[in-house]
Amino acid sequence: MRFMVILRTKDTYFMLPEERQLKLFEDSVAFVERHRKAGNCKEINYLPGSKGTVSIWVAESSEEITLRFLENPMSIYEDAQIYLLSDWDAFVSTTRKIYRHLLAKK
Image 1 (spheres, rainbow, N blue to C red):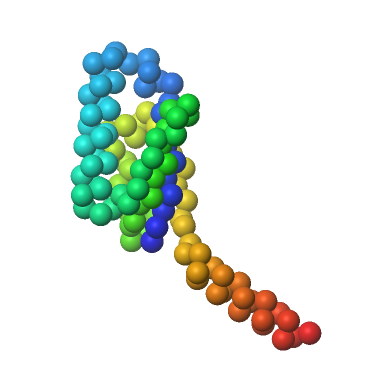
Image 2: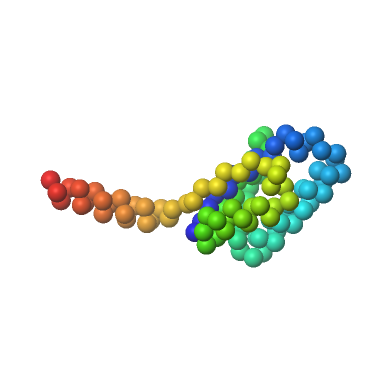
């Protein structure tokens, strides 16, 4: 399963001492890099001006992706939105089948 993850850093992070911010930042980068190398994080982009990132991840389930992000050292300082992504071609194919079925009833 593929997931789009949008993370936004909370203001409470920026109230921490800069040394603590740096440590959390570096630990979070290491978390992402570990998952990039493992093939779990397919793409990640910074959202300028939003204090956040958007990324594409793969996992076997919603529970797995949720638990994975709890391992991120920054998790208590971030608001996360996680969306399951559906394959475009499968969506188009299924939608066409639905319309053919509906139109056949008329």
